[in-house]
Length: 163
Image (cartoon, rainbow, N blue to C red; front, side, top):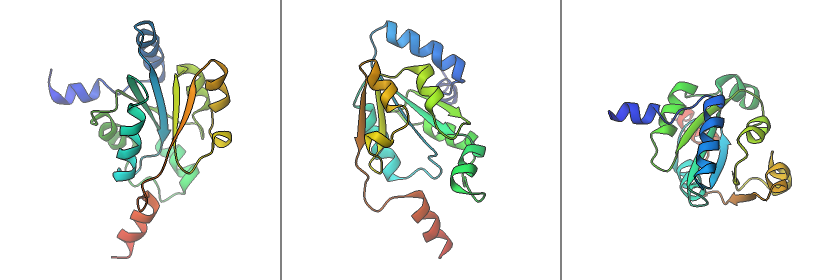
């Protein structure tokens, strides 16, 4: 298979990913879910994804659409459009599936996919993680990965603007 096709095959619509999750679950795979904007991919993102992948067999990364990023971060974001962000994420070996969501939170997507493990970065507490009560309600777990200090998209953008 051509390498570009291998990357494209990891990018799913919500419906196709729901079907794929059912297949993975039936084959005994432990599904891990995380989400975010991942606007400018940096060391902190890569650390989070690599650690998240260690909690199961399949790592799903749900990315905010461009419209969703703008609502959350402002009209000057995202810096990287959703097509490029999905391609970059799907290119990572530790990521098994990438999908987009347009809502402000991934709550509905979490309900659809029913991951075994929900992972977020260190700026969250379990009581603030969208979908945590739902995942815990069927025996799933919620994991918080500590931030790698010195890495954030906002600080990276500010540093670039100051040059």
